[in-house]
Amino acid sequence: MAEPTTALKDTAACGTQPAPPCTLVIFGAGGDLTKRLLMPSLYNLAGAGLLAEGFSILGIDHNDGTDESLRDNLTQTLEAFSKDPTSEFHADHIDPKSWGFIRDRLHYLKGDFEKPETYAAVKQRVTGSAVFYCAVAARFFGTIVDGLGQAGLLKQEGDGFRRVVIEKPFGSDLESARALNARILKQGDESQFYRIDHFLGKETVQSIMAFRFANGLLEPVWRREYIDSIQITAAETVGVEERGGFYEPTGALRDMVPNHMFQLLCMVAMEPPNSFDAEAVRTEKAKLAEAVKPILPEDAVRGQYTAGTSEGRDVPAYRDEPHVAKDSVTETYIALKLNIENWRWAGVPFYVRTGKRMTGRRTEIAVLFKPAPFKMFEDTPTADLAPTVMRIQIDPDHGVSTEFNVKVPGPQMAIGRVRSGFRYKDFFADRPNVGYETLLYDCMTGDATLFQRADNIEAGWAAVDPLLEGWPQGEVTFYPAGSAGPKEADALLARDGRHWLGLDGETD
Image (cartoon, rainbow, N blue to C red; front, side, top):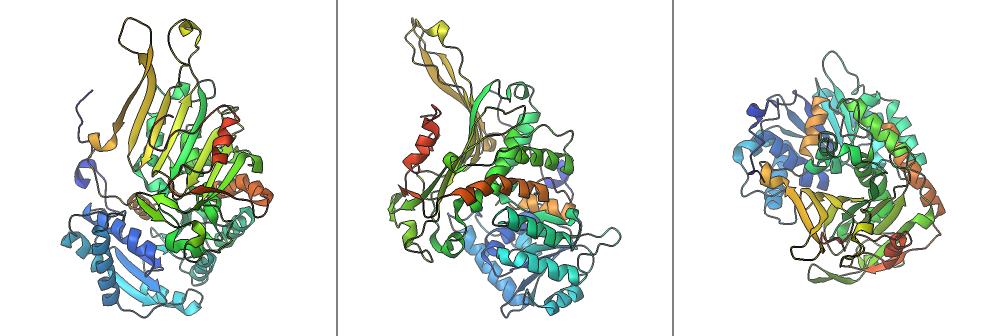
């Protein structure tokens, strides 16, 4: 194997230019998203030299505050997160130059999101290009966009731009997603709205397209003739904990499937776009999402964690978490069998699972190839030939591994299993990243490739809507915290003669 090489240089060397000057207006400046993810991302962008001198931030929230109080508060939280091993943000120390660049540009405005005078005040303070970030509860998305539009804040003049970033969940079903799309598009053009999914900010997710389409070895076999099935997993060891108020009416299906899981599905299964132009890529993703057959209840398993042991400590049941009903039937785990009705994937099942309080933290896409014919080995001391498995690892490790069959050394023909692969950190410079850096930079530069278009959002909800409507009321299975999920999820694959891959990275 070739020696690892450093493929990334500094910003100037690799030709990446700072984003154009703009004001980032954050609605929800006092919230967890701003503190935990947006500020560390901006700090990292500043350290990489990707923010212009004319960049500024206006934070808006309903509490009393000043520029200095916002700066002090965010400085304290950034320092705290840098020392927290469970945080996405890790740093040996806070670089005073990088944070100073952000801190000096922080400004505060007290405002009620539902009052016109808030937007009038914003208009007085924002000139030139601007990005409006909705780091708020979903119920405020439409309200904020209405306020911006009615105040004239979304009008674009000359070379300037006005863009809006909308977090998930974008709707709670197909009807509400369509209604929200219709509402925001009354105030601006589709090109101005950036529906964000932080999964697409992960470097490995972005690399799936390069991995698939830049290697002639893969594309010829990336189809139903050679692939048996695909498993997409997003398993977490953490529980709901303090987020019960949000999670109770949402659940794992709404929280994860039409957005995160469908984005991974689109990346791995879409047709090659004719270019890497944003609209070309987003069109192919939308086509793929529209080809997913509506999911029926018999192809789904809902689970909820009970008390158990996770990472060596006792943890409570979901029903005993704060702000959760004692008789809750909200699912914290979902497993699905998906079918794609197009020429490339007809007959290939896609198995999707995501859950909290599972035995391991793992996000990956596993491609299981059809096994080789067994006949020539039938008179040799071999077991059934296991399929070749390619794993695209997204979290916590970043890389690709392939498991395949070889001959075991010795006088007899015996088949053994080996693994080959790479980790990104062995070949490329490791850069600070909490997952939002690329997305924020792309929004400021006008690259919408990694953001969802209205039709992509609605296609995801169209696939899961029959499931939301068809689930028997009050039906949920249970699994102990620290396990791999409910046994019913194993049965979902067993009826097809298949099984889930291990969450420890093993095939069995």
